Image 1 (cartoon, rainbow, N blue to C red):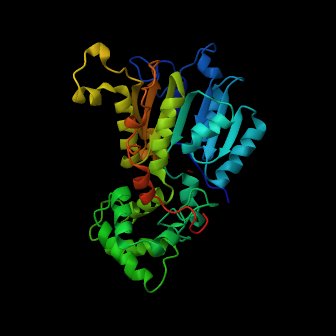
Image 2 (spheres, helix red, strand yellow):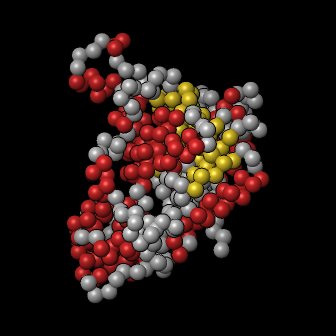
Image 3 (cartoon, rainbow, N blue to C red):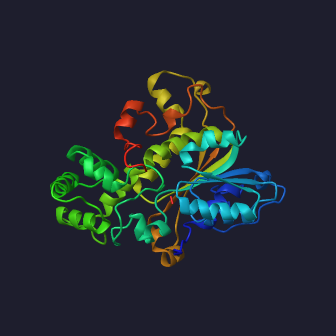
Length: 366
């Protein structure tokens, strides 16, 4: 069955990669101004880290020249099938069946050392939400899965069957910002003692009974489903690695354009851009330095874009979308690397491993 997918912030995202004056005073933003055919950006190398059904990639290809190259990533086997069909008709496209966090190695394997732009549309896509069999939606009966890549890693049902109350509480509180996380975790533990949780509606109904007050216009299971999806797919961990990769791989004047749909992702992107644009702020607190001794900015923020009223009316899921854009400067990367610019990368490997779901259990964006 085919599920409709409307790309969010389509024109602004591609404008962000290609328009020379995007985000600057007097520059094009939502209106896609004509790009000079001699602009080297049109022959550049780009990455779409979340191919989905290819809306952003197709729009980008329609504006690029014949010498350009677009490398697309996705974990979802269905999305990869669509991507391979596109690559079969457009030689500029190369497909990688993996998450965007693997960019450095995947691009190196393709002989690519630097890129001119990267775009990410974070979170779950409309086709994934609409397909009950994927288990992402609390509004449709389906297996409690939620894996972006259905070929590997544990399902949500498998993880809930063995996680402790404290582990469940921590995940639901941290990744869902759910104030009733403990009550939800206890309710799940009591239920699984008599019968396993297998379906989305079983979990949604269980959570609804544990959440004492409801936010206006929001299903009581919204935050729990978000938390479990983020956790089981390591979404924030992978975003941190992808942001670090973008900082390292972008050519001078190369850009990244990241669409976030919830505050956890957007906060990470915003903080990364701010830190890379003001690398001196942390240094200044630690030691007295002259202005000419301060480290230069490696990124410039080009601002943010929200969906306009027309887009929201046609695609209500775009209401919460935030596009943030930044451009690489020609300053060299710091000798110590870019980890200090990216929230989440400061964690030790032990901390990261402790929070990550086991990849061997149960054998298992878009």
